[in-house]
Length: 271
Image (cartoon, rainbow, N blue to C red; front, top):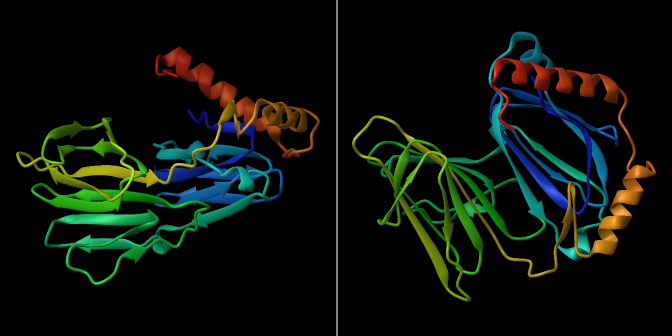
């Protein structure tokens, strides 16, 4: 039952959509389209504002299946909040993947960089970010190990979505766990993850960090700005149509509402 996210606005930040399974159709009020398949990442800079739609693609709606992935909201610095919208739709063959056979791990470098133990230089992502960020998708085989060094002042977290393992030799992190790392004013932070050793299940997790902007945040629904006055302006701009619209909005809303009703009827609705 393809609920999706029919037409809605954004302003002042970036949405990062990373698809693991299935496919998602993207449309927006500036005429952009995209069919994001498994392994794709879309880094959308909403900037000054856009209306977009995120729905399961036609194949998924027709044949059924699983749509699995993540969406991360990345705040923009005040100086960038009103820049023109921009898209970086990146297929899996353009996302660098590093295989560390010695430590039994694979790392997809979605943003930022990662340096394998013993290598001369880090592998850098093709996606450009407005502020320093790293975004890694890590797969560790049983008895494998992953390490990463990052600036200690970054806000950094780890999210486990398959298996389990030990973080920094002390913390057991299992599926759906989030690990937050303490920030320091200088130097480097380090993370070491060892996959669970008493099973055949690999461990998969996202490791994400970025430099703090240290700016005021005002947020309302799909708008992230610095002041309440800027939020009110965003709401007014959307309601007056200045962010545009997309043809077919009523049909997408109908599909989404029918899917919600079906899930509630079958007892699978948990939102």
